[in-house]
Length: 110
Ligand code: FES
Image 1 (cartoon, helix red, strand yellow):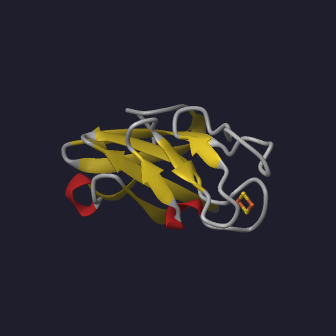
Image 2 (cartoon, helix red, strand yellow; image 1 turned 30 degrees about the vertical axis):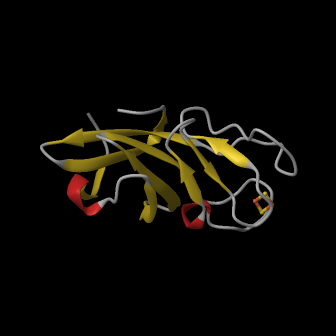
């Protein structure tokens, strides 16, 4: 398994997002329960950090605070305008209590 350790699972607040830079990519890492998701941190509509948006644990999405498009954490697809393009989704694992993100491989939740 490849990837980069970004933090301990316990460092992530459940139902919240945190921003990390992995390689040359800004990544929003979201914890819901013991599941971890990683998506591109920059909104596909404009240069806005998605990790500053609100996480919905019910439908596993994150809302861009600027204009309200909600991005699915497993597909990166926005549910409404103004964003029309998905953001990248990365493989996220929890290994021995540490969060590992692989920005070289597209994927979904661990
Ligand atoms: S900047 Fe994110 S929806 Fe407009």
